[in-house]
Image (cartoon, rainbow, N blue to C red; front, side, top):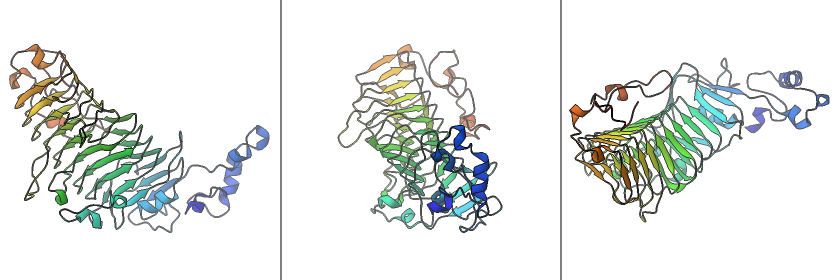
Length: 412
């Protein structure tokens, strides 16, 4: 399949045979102009198009698209872009991404401009693993990824055995994705994975019949380590287990301007429901090893148990300008960690805080007073939970903004 990219001939999808060399010769400087032979032979970046009515033997152009995302991914190399036309792509095998881009020359997998493709994993055998069963590692994810330097954006991934499963992934950008109704965690990053950005993710309705709800989160960054992983602008809701879970991920993860609500309720009538029901689970594990995760400008509300929990993580967490509201347990349950709690807000949680051995400064419980519904401008979350803005951002609202102007809690 790699020969189709024309790494030696200069051929690109959609060009007649022989045209690529001539076009490349016209566009590239000559060796006499100071370029190297390798630069002269470098292929131009390809645009590879996929459409429901395409053919995997096609050129991969708008006029002659491929039929499957996998065929396009197999053709793509550093600098190339795969665009997927609107429609539903029903998988018989999961999409496997194993080829990496390069620094400064990522591979892009995205929706065709103005269209919304849906990748449906409901027919994958691993999506319907029986109770007590396990999912083989290579079958995890409607998209199974072990690669670096990709940009994946504007796709909807549904009903897979995990939505996106990324293990050993570095320097990727995941932007404006929806992962919903998957039979395990909507988006899971694990293993030795560093410097990944997850931006504007919507992940909801993920559930795991094989474990009665004990495992399926909206977003999991777990069971691994790696520097520089960030989550910005995610919304994680109505998942069987937790909104966000950092179980046994031992390097700091930063979460910013992210919202988790309504997690941990049995919406699927599982007979022996085991969902944990936290908004943000900031670590923990069988050995409870320390990890210094950070949470800033985030919201957790209406979760079955805690808004934010260290889950036994003894590390030095940082939780700043975060708001919790009407959670069934504690707003901030950080009794086992050394957390720096600064300018956070708890409104009508079953309990406000279990602060542990860290510091607490300028939080609602430090300021005193009655922090009920009348203390904030709004308890109407409909704007926060409604449609995103044209740029993919979470819309601004007065939700949980202190009525007296106190500089505490999240702002959107």
